Image 1 (cartoon, one colour):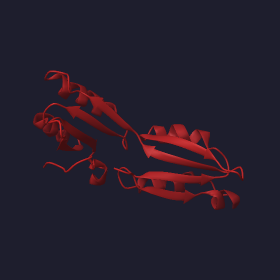
Image 2 (tube, one colour; image 1 turned 90 degrees about the vertical axis):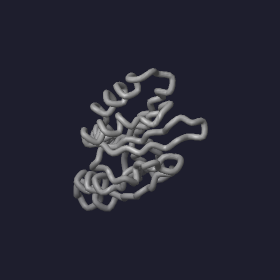
Image 3 (tube, helix red, strand yellow; image 1 turned 120 degrees about the horizontal axis):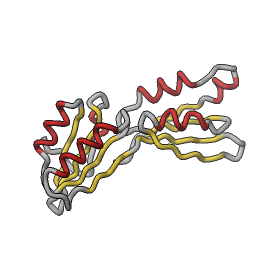
Length: 161
């Protein structure tokens, strides 16, 4: 899945003396699940990195020839390869990760089987998940907070209800 990229240029706001933080946070809140925010700014906004990391975003910064910066904030993905573990370890490790994952981050767990019991427990805890069978017979399970739109659940194959 190639994430969507939404661009926000805060240089005009800063040039007019307005702080851009509310505009940036509003843009982040409005992103479709799995989408990235590309921020154009006249300087590297170091404090913003930790603020958005707490929401589940990673960043990459590119200095431009004119001295400005292009910073891309992308949702963090935690990948758990649990295919070699015996039950109930995959269920337990996935629930532990879900308990601490940031709001916009997602978990991709790889299991040997479709984790039917896990999916029910995740739903009880406010998560949405999809499971997709892989060509080798294993399963890719994409998990996000239920408040995040279902577009973040786009795994590499077709969804299995």
